[in-house]
Image 1 (cartoon, helix red, strand yellow):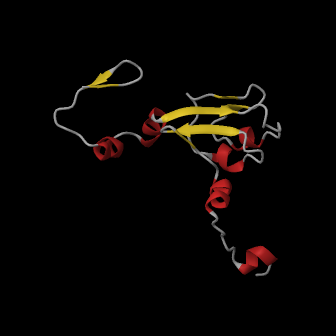
Image 2 (spheres, rainbow, N blue to C red):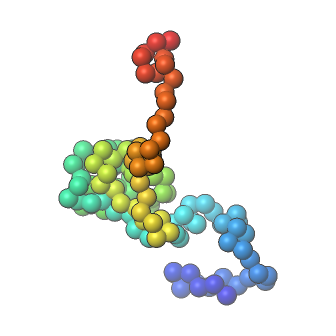
Image 3 (spheres, rainbow, N blue to C red):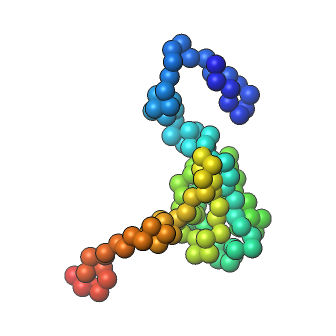
Length: 121
């Protein structure tokens, strides 16, 4: 028997692996289950509204520094686009960083096609 955070229990008729669980659960539900924290750092936040504007579900209230975890679908749009890196998300015990920050931290340089860099067609 597996106990989940809401207090409900699941009973399995056979031994299941982590892969079985991940494959058979709805991705959003599973993602929410292992998201430990999702918030706005009010000291870092520049109040530009980018995170709230790009949130597809309207889950972010930058004035309160809050993310409505019931509404959030863990798309990471807020993390990937916050210019101040003020959005905090802890996923399975590890803090996440946005795409551009990840590239910078890992020393990865993405080479854009010439026509995008120089505006040529």
